[in-house]
Image (cartoon, rainbow, N blue to C red; front, side, top):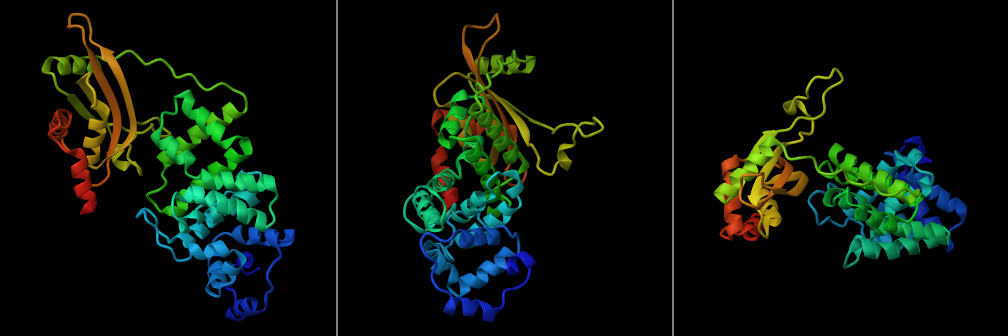
Length: 375
């Protein structure tokens, strides 16, 4: 009632609850479970009510597994909150998405439990799956709902990791996610949980770019689950004159050739070109690289970009047959979209010099990254 009304919970009332409230039976009565869901779905006021109950030990008595994550620090600096506070913040964020899903009770419960495994050794998602299934049964969810909650906790990172690290045009990527999720309802819940979790993590964990990638993946998986075949990637467009020129130059010089050029976003409502300097989330620049075909090109380029603190937004690689009049040879053409993590972009000449060293083995990329992390 305090959370729904947006009022502080009296210290006297909390202490009376802690001293006089009897333990709930196992499984909980339906009313108790529904009241927990109501508390979690009350939005921002939930935080102060939950913390008041937690301070007097009420939460740990209701949910014994909570004690393992209480005040537990995060291992990743991208997190703003401790583990327990992050879980409540995720529920607060998820409360804003309850109209997007058919089972808001499962969404809110998954938000509360998705990182509960961080109190145990090993992969927190694997440990959390077992805990979530046990907690779900204890608070009165049936076996089917408990299985959905366990799946959501086990795979709460699936969508964002797949969307940002895999090729969404590859049918195998979409099929793998569809097989893991299994049903439209679970996919719907996982999409909302993914966004709530990221928003509750911190400003570095979510962006319009990540949101668009996740939404694209969800759309493709939903279509597959509905019985449609995965989209067939469009054939690669013919190389442009600039790409052919870079390929020929890379072949003749025997080394990498690259260009950096700004890339603006979509035009505004009046059809005017976007101003990259005014974009709230810059798309960065296009890095076009041509290099004679040889082993290790992709990791070398990725490593050099990491050394220069360049965030990769997109990455495409294709082999290019040189035009007539040039000796028979294949050149790799890499088209990347990159943005500076900090400060300004490095000069193209410096990127090329480091790439030459990375390809010939004289630049220890792993060592450079390890030294920077240690510092």
